[in-house]
Amino acid sequence: MAATGFTSTRTAAAEPEASAWLEHMHGFLPSRRSVPVVRKEELAEGVFSLSIRDGYAARNSAAGQFVNVYTHDGQKLFPRPLGVCGTDGDTVSFIFAVVGGGTAEISSLEAGDYVDILGPLGKPYSIEDNREYLLVGGGLGIPPLIYAAQKIADMQGVRTTALFGYRDTRFADSIIGIYADTAYSITNAEGNVITLLDRWDQGKRHFTGSSEGGSAEILCCGPEAMMRAVHRWAAAHGMPAQFSLEERMGCGYGACFACVAPTVTGYRKVCLDGPVFSAEELVWGRGKEGDR
Image 1 (tube, rainbow, N blue to C red):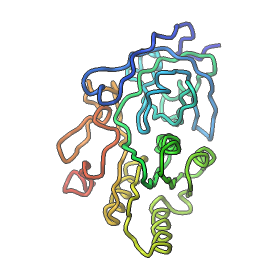
Image 2 (image 1 turned 90 degrees about the vertical axis):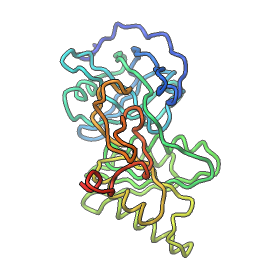
Image 3 (image 1 turned 180 degrees about the horizontal axis):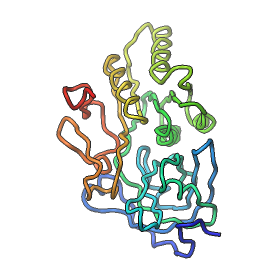
């Protein structure tokens, strides 16, 4: 039986032509389409994994991008943006928490139901060969970093260390362990991601005699307070960093201006110009806008 609020009678739309995020900026978007759910699992209380079958999104998603998921509820005008957590063949996976009516309806989906999506959308992380990346995430900011680790695992000369902070339940450790070279996690009772970054830094000094970041770069996603702390830490240690901002979105492709955020060059649309921004682009720590 189809879940309430969703249709299981739509046929999948014709697959759109492939488009990179840069082409989205020039007005080209993949089409909204109906796709089947292949799996749903509750990982922890109120935290779910959802997998859909969509070859286009599976082939064209990059780490840090998201997919808009629609509820087909007329009272919920805007879709819910879910960060891509992983791909396998023509399957795309997400991890999300129930935080309101929209995500509650999405969590009620079961295998065999159909759901409307649009994506992939947004600017992804910039990942290069022959580098070391620290994947620093907190809470529901962790899933996009799992996908980053999956993508990096196929690259040449790239090493990843995952540093994850949880409120309580470590819901993603078994997943990240498949892809990352090294993974550490911590709960609120034990510390936070800055604790883990300090431990990583101490270990680096012990083995290299240097506290400089070297070729390492931080990829970060999570609550804003956590990311601001990581931003300060990276600046103090001379490390480049990229941050995936979490803002309440509307359309997901830059038309509604619901998700603008201040940057050093003015207000930018998080859904289109981001969600990933470099540390240098952000105003955090730069006067009134950045000090809150």
